[in-house]
Image (cartoon, rainbow, N blue to C red; front, top):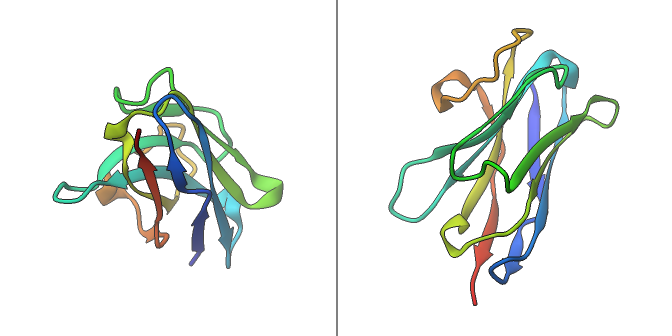
Length: 126
């Protein structure tokens, strides 16, 4: 089992940047494929980005391609999401998720993940 804690959310103006972090504990971080999801009020939780256990492959939702970058440092047990050129529609609670997995296919469905953090709020406003 792994515990996940997100941080780095906040208020930002359109066009700004934020870097979210997800600190993992309780098990070997490199055993897990990781993902970022987000949920806006009144909407379902949606996929944002995913990365395989060894950073071999990544995947992004169309909404974030070219603006978001997912990365991880296994030695620091930490997952990141760099978000640039933020838009008001990026406003949501952002969650990191983990799945014990050594496949070389990023997991893009929320049903594929067993462990979730508590979320961090990102608000983009002018």
